[in-house]
Length: 66
Image (cartoon, rainbow, N blue to C red; front, side):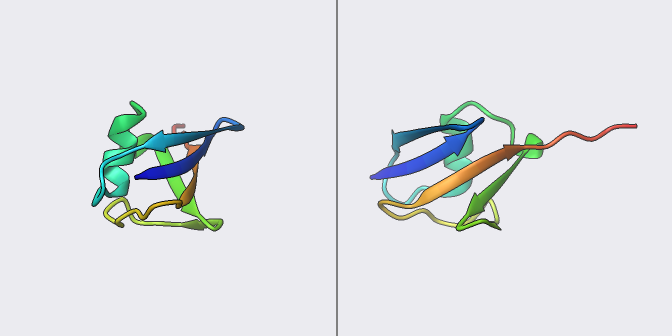
């Protein structure tokens, strides 16, 4: 299935297996789940949510420290 991803201001379309969840997406693009927030329709979504054909996600990097 094909989904759309916006990361660092760049949009791209990614082909991923049917029945994948957001963790699979994160692995596919080579990011660490503790370093990002994934939004769908501007709302944060759990990493275990399943994706559907044509979904669009925005990936935002987060940082913490002190």
